[in-house]
Every structure is written in C-alpha cells, then in structure tokens.
Length: 592
DNA sequence: GGGCTGTACTG
DNA sequence: CAGTACA
DNA sequence: GCCC
Image (cartoon, rainbow, N blue to C red; front, top):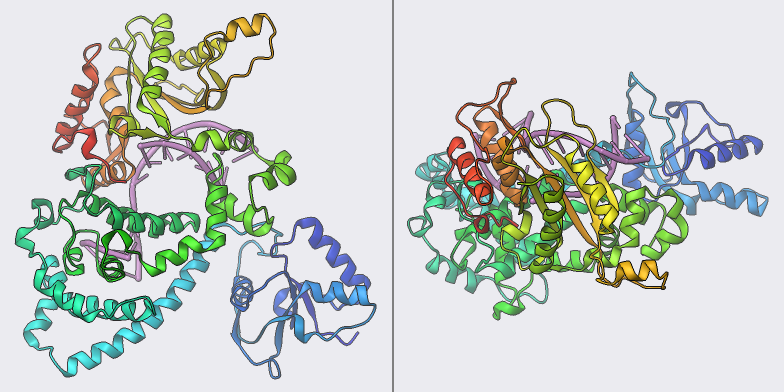
C-alpha cells in the first residue's frame, strides 16, 4: 500500500482491542512497524495534540508541532481506519488527524518497553503530565511577571528594597507585598472579567486598613507553621472564604495533585486558626502557609461583591460548574473509589452515575466498592452525636461481656465536637496490658455480627504478630429494630429502615492508648503536622508510639492508660508533654 | 531545586 | 505494586 | 503552592 510505516499506539485500548486492531491492520496490508521510532504514521485513540506529544515522548520520541503540509509525522484517530474499512475505500486522512509534528530527537530508553498495553495510565505518568502542564502555565506567568518586574525596576526599586527582598521571612513577605502580590492582583482582577468591579478603590482601601504584623496573633508573629502547635477552633470568622479553598482542594484531590492537596490543606488550616475577619490580601501573605496565590484568591473574593454573603471567586465558580469535576466527585463519594478509579470510570468507561456503575460494571467492582455502591445514599447521610453514642454503648456492652474492665472512647470528629458526623470512630482498650488477647477484635466483631448489628466487614486486621497489638476494623453498622428478633423468628417480611453507618473500631493496648487517641482524634492536617513535628526531631511516629529513626522507642513519651474510665485524656496529655507540645483540647484541632 | 505524614489492607 | 482508606 |  501507499501508507507510511505505521504504529498503533495502545493508549486507552484494552489488550483485546489492541490485538484485534493489529490483526485487522495487517489484514488490510497496512505497513506496521514493530517499534514506534521507525514509524511516521501513528494510529491512536487520542483526542488532543498535547496528549499525542506526551505519548510519543514516553516512547523516547521528542516532537515539536508542525503544520500539516510539511510535517513528517502525524497521529491519526483509529476511527479513520475503521471508517475506511466500513466504506471499503481509503478516506481522506485530514479530518482524522489529531497531531502533526516534526521529530527533534529520539531517545533510546533502556529498561522495560513502554509497549505494554495498559488499560489506564499509572499515577506516575499522570503526575508527570500534570507537571508538564503546570510548567507550561508557570512559564507564561514568569514571562508576564518579568515584564512587570522590569517596568517596576525602572521606577521605584532602590538598593535598600533590594536587600530587604532577600532578608528574613516575614520581612521578606512584607516587602514582597507591593510587587509579586500586586502583580497577582492585577492579573486576577483583569481575568475576573465583566462581573468584577474596578479593583483599584478596594485595593487602596486595603492598604489603609491592613492589619500590621504587630496586631497579629502570637503564632503568626512567631511564624508557627504546624497546626499541632496552635489552636484551631471549628468556627472561623472567615468560613465563607475558606469554603472556596475547600473547593479548590477537592479539585486537587480528584486530579491526584498531591502537592496541591498539601498546599491548600496547609492554607486552610492556617486561616481556620486565624481569629480575626480578614480585611485585606496583604494580611494573608503574613500568615504561614499562605502566600501570593492565596492572597490573590482572597482579593478576587473580596472584590467580587460588596455584600459578603454574595462574594465568590470566579475561578472557583468555574470549577463548581465543570461537569467532569461534578461527575468525578459523585463517583469519588462511593466508598472504595478513589481518584484513580473515579477518573477511569468517568473518562474511560464513560459511566455517568451510580446506576451506570451497577448496570455496566457490577461484576468488576471490588467487594468494598459493591458495598459502597449498595449503601451510597446511606453513607452520605450525616449522623447525629447521639447515634454515635448509641453505637458506642452497644459495642462497649459487647466488649465488656467479652472482657470485663474494657474501656472505650469515641474519637474522630465526634471528639472534636462536630454536630454531624460521617462515621463513628471508637477506640477500645483495657488498663491491664495482659488482658487484651490478639484475637480480641476478631471476637468482638464476631459477637456483634451474631447480634446482627454489623452488615459487612469492610476491613479487619487479622494479623497480630508479636509486638503489634493495635488492630482496626472498618464496619458497616445498622442498628437493630427492637422487634427484629421477633420478625426473624416469625419469618415476617420485616424491613429494617435504619440507616447504615460507617463504624471504625480500634483496639489498642494500654501503653499506646494516648498515641492512638491522638491519631484517631485528628483532624487530618493536624495529624499530618504532628508527624512533621516529630520528623523534624528525628522521630518516627506511628499509632503505637514514637520511635527514633532507627528503631528504639523514644524515652520520655508515655501515653499509657493507667486507670479505667477517665484515663484516656490523661494518657493523651502525657503524649503532648513527651513530645514537647502544648496540650490542645480536641475542639482546637479542627484543621478542616 | 527538592520536599511535602505515615501505615496497612486488598486485589 | 498500585490504589484506597484512615485521621 | 509554599518553604527552605
């Protein structure tokens, strides 16, 4: 045939589809090449030039886009070939061409061939892709910034400013305000578009009212970056703005942008700890973990409307309306479905709702995903505090029958004081270290199963090697109806209408009760920062204790449970002391 | 320019 | 090993 | 995205 050497890219094709297509291509005398580097025509199920470039690059072929007429290399939709077969003749190739380019280098990569057929990309590849996209955007930003920088240098900047530029951090931040911050603000208020009011008056106003660093809370002045070293209450005077940061973080979660998740979590935790209503974006850059980006978002929010209740951030509103993100979030709410699976289901398999998942994919789901789908609605329903208390009381009753003297405590968001909960976290221990057998949790779960309180065990730690006595179980709970037994014995078609609840059980030996309580009380960023605090001191911290980097338990940290009943919090206090941290009540760990 | 919490199960 | 789930 |  007159075709150029051709290669079929396996991207997004199942192994079976890939093989079938190869056979069909061969049958139609398409000149297939065994390696991509010798091909000049690529067939692929890819929709964007960027992606084509990426796929070729992962195969060592570096390309630059090139106009169609002169390009020696092109990537064409597989559909072109299938349409040709259908039509019985060679159709014009142009409409199906996704990417045309010239090859600037071919890198022979050692190691495993990338021609493994994959159903989906690995996380690593996606990270790399995101990285590239981000770099591109950043380069544009830098360019724009450079222009402004030069303009400014012509004018106001002098030697004194220049040295301050590089000085100590909060100083640095203050001097930066007026340069990078204003750039960001100008950029954003420009992009804010029609709905935005002119930004200059607000900006001038901000300058006048800006809170100085001397009026800031003590932890800001000391530049305390870790949330475990400050008080973070559940209520914030800036809750409306913080909600927008949550939206951005959710987006970063769905795109597996670990770094973005960290950055926004840190910023959220800081603002959540900040006790005053924010007045200006200049105030924000003085806060640890917040810099020009967060400040720009705040400015965008502040200038979006005069009525605080009606303020928005245009970029965030776009995220909320993005149907892909809305769909991904919906799938992600299924228990057992993380970002990777959500993306695979939404983009590759095209499932648009939970019913699609059931209809087209049920058999392929993991066991816990099936449970997650089955109780999708129930698991979204928030639980009241009294429900968690009931669950605690029932489990405590069973545990005490198995082992008298057992003590329990509700941790998680319950302990932090939330009024509505997504699950119940119950810690279980016993003041006598010799009493808790490794099989205790298993026997407790079995006992609750017999009683009919547990529908499913999502996960149960069965391994109990010597030295490890902390065990966890994740359960699906349904409160029994009082006449359930009667219904069962009389074989009446009774239906239990109680909502299924997620319950996590943690059995800890008394020596590690304080650590375990700290860990399961959270919140997320608080625990993360706690580990950072320990890492900075060369300690490794697990739920079972604090260890030197290489093995030995750190002396002076005693989180032991000494007494029955009220011993939990005292054990936790001793851990704070041992770590050199100030005690924080659970209600002050609401890092969001 | 490199780093970002740490652990354990499931498939 | 990758993905997910805890807080 | 922010920090060192």
